[in-house]
Length: 328
Image (cartoon, rainbow, N blue to C red; front, side, top):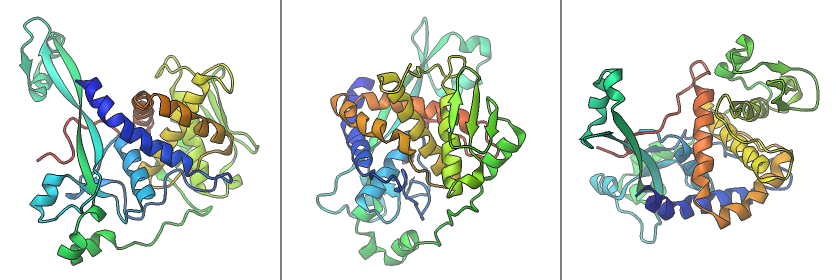
């Protein structure tokens, strides 16, 4: 069942990522995630989306020019007295539903009941993740502007954009640096290279004052923190032996997407590092050949983001939803 769903929605998600990569220009000044003045993607009730859906809906909103990242199902639109504009295409939002089944009797129980069991009894059950998805439409694909003009205006009126100048600060990241509470040491020193050394298990990064903006500084740190999360004793990813091989390129894509998602959750946009431009462009062919492979990438991104958010004080945790955001 999972594979059927993946085969169904993977082409849509992959097509969106390909379009996003293709928008990256040669001078690499365009943010990987556009500056969203209306917050993170959420449904009409205000419930935020999670995990890879955040990236996908941010990309979709930017590419399609939506005025705000607010989405809804067809059913919810009808409940609100709204009509979906003719010719509008829905976009799939995916989530994982956990089913609990006894290993011997095969009897299923509810997840809440499973969590109430003693640890010893839980060992007799299997947790079976099953992928589900539901189609959503953006606010601009409805007639809310005509039907409910005041409500539409309140949802789409721009707020003052954040100042991403050299003065940008990020409390969770700053406290982590001050306390050296990341998984490995982070050395800030004057220089012209940012990198993670697997042999030393250490991150080296130029000083914040060397960056044209605070967002670029934090984005660079998040990229390297993502690399350090992938060691064998942590998340166990393959780094690749040299630039140009498949594992190396895959790891760079994971690091870029992880930095992008973390940056969005922490309130700032991140910009792709110039040295990774070729790898992002190079992945276009791979994604076109194997659309379902994107799910493997997003799974590793979600794990890295979760590991980072769990170690940043006051940062929102990144966990997969067990039920859809639109569920009643």
